[in-house]
Image (cartoon, rainbow over all chains, first blue to last red; front, side, top):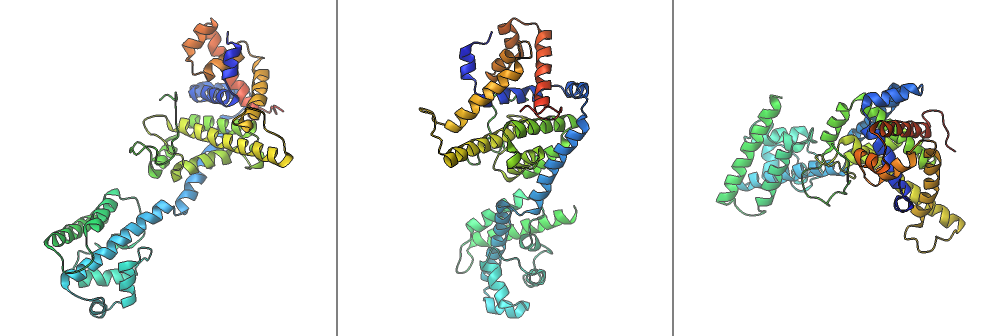
Length: 194
Length: 196
């Protein structure tokens, strides 16, 4: 028999946990039988529970999480650094780029320095054309993330971490830039074929 | 998958990749069976009732919704290889409702200036525990071996250990177990029993 000592040790939260364990461990058909014997219908209880969970999912999808926003900003930061490196590679100023690519200079500055800013689609298109980048290679950095792409996020972080701010591109930075653009091109090819 | 010592760690306590992210959680939700949903709905109803949550939420489903939300957001992360998903949700609901009950008890104490019991590190939990113990003892008394089985289960004993310790057969244990399930379902308000 369980002793008073056992009783003293068990608090009601432990007992609630034990009760819940009985339900969790019960075979499904047994639980249906128990409910049926009590004149209850499991379908209604199950449906309400499922609706509650699906409501949570729908709300979660509709609400941008801080983590989600951080991921988009990381991609934008990668875009900004990429743009700076491309200018450094080609030795052109922001003003010169604005004039030649027919983009508003303020837009260029925001893309380069404001990760919270989402560039206009036309800006992205003009930049891809001007720098002769593979089609849509900048687009995947520019828009909101459609789905989690861990590989892309990691590659952007790696790229951003290894780039420097000023001066002509070093040999390593040239390679970094080439590899990153190649990676973006392969990503945009993957998405086209999805 | 066992639930022996589930722990819903807060983010940051374990740097491993064994925690499910939001897409994985969504996938799991889509794969639950009607039996799983019945269990979750029953547990949500039970906790809603015993923790008196009707002042917090409109219905038991809201407690389940909160548990799913916190899992999706990463606040209560599901350890993939440790426990099944429904165990995780059940424990999360238990935890959330437990904290709410404690906070309510504390607010009442403060509002009515009721002193805390002497030598009690967590007076809110102690008060709730004593009352709940009495209720649980009372309504499991109608089941042969009910109270003893419940106590031993709460200590983490397995079915065979309980049978051995109480010198009951497996048929007796199974009968007791099913009656306890019925009692929980009734007490949760699903069987028209108020339990007040």
